[in-house]
Length: 344
Picture 1 (cartoon, rainbow, N blue to C red):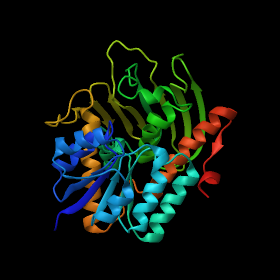
Picture 2 (cartoon, rainbow, N blue to C red):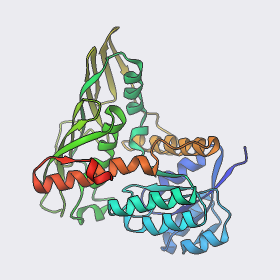
Picture 3 (cartoon, rainbow, N blue to C red):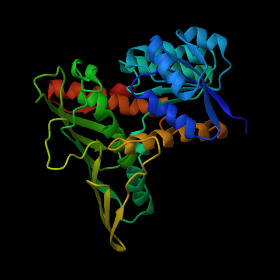
């Protein structure tokens, strides 16, 4: 198979991880990069040996023959960039949050569908190897039918030092972190019918919420609690681990701090270390997220080669995005929110 030619739009904080991952993946290469900031363009271009550099996305699409584009900009720019890619019949990976509004997200999915080009959202948390290990246990039937789950991310890690803009938005933890946890809940327990949400702001120096607790009814009959906090000080800082509890008709799954997976099921109890690999370019404690970037981008390349829809396609991510919107609506009203109305 010929190597796929890709371009990266946006050379900011997280995009460096994506560039490392593209270098590790067989079957694809980034041949051009684009950013309005000339210094970021220079740094990333020099670091990864990319000679073709553009300050304007329209010039990028006009000047390059591309098999895909990886959009790693902030959410307000996503819709025009995705629609531009669709107009040029270029398959798209788009960073999360997918869009500023659900209306924008639906328009982006529609534009790519009408153009006949694949669209995948870079929703990488479900691709972390410990979370994939939990999914594998569920698929094995070892704990029977799940009826309860808890997806928990509680930390006091200073995320604002490297991403200061996170402290300024009226929306914070649900939009930035909770979106991942909600997607994991969908990945493990299926789609959601109803969500009830409570939020709080503990840190007085930020504009948005830094604590969120969400109770969800899944179409499968299971109930889950998704809880996120950047105000929780623990004896051992777990960042950036997602902890998981799932109860089933025949047993339980516990993914605990330190990547310790305990399964009690039909064949007794087994304890496994599911620590993610530390890639040569990765660094602790970020290595679980960095490893998942390689996994999701390899999935994208495999899907393009096989002509199949990615697991985190734009259409699929609308359901996760709708959960975010429903969570904020429910936090404001303090009432349960039905998902069906948001997705029609």
